Length: 193
Image (cartoon, rainbow, N blue to C red; front, side, top):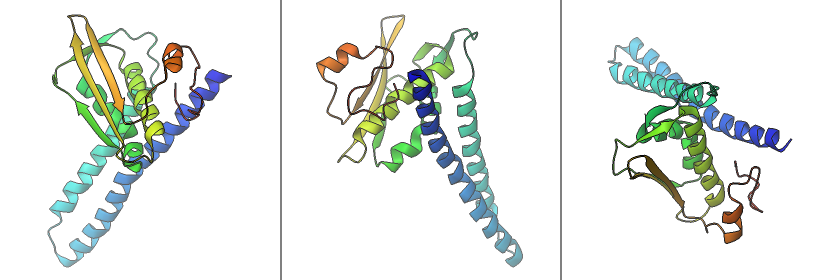
């Protein structure tokens, strides 16, 4: 039951963010189409509006592609070598609206744009999404809030992904139980696990 509730919470959070991410380009498209309609009637050059419509369609397409990767069943998918920078891009497509809505500064510290991670794309995006959204929930509405994420090589076979935010940090008791299934720190009812 706890797993079902946790999954539902994640799903609802993502649906809210995705609806916002798709609605923005659709609003731009509708506004530009109306402007183009008026421009055509008056003989104006509408190439700028056409380019902005194309950009908005591209943005909506990226949201949908990220969702498709995020939602696919990868139980039988072999591990792949994936670029960290591309994983972050796909993750941000899904959660960017929540970050912007809370006024949080987001920064990727990407010293090596070619770092690769061996894993399953959808699962890695889900982990990054959960880490970022847990930070968003913890620091929402706080002054000077920020989230930084970085990835660095540790030897030949490992990478270390770090997510740092302006929150108060985790207590030693929480750190001790961090990887227990279904564990939620008290007061973190919005956490995604």
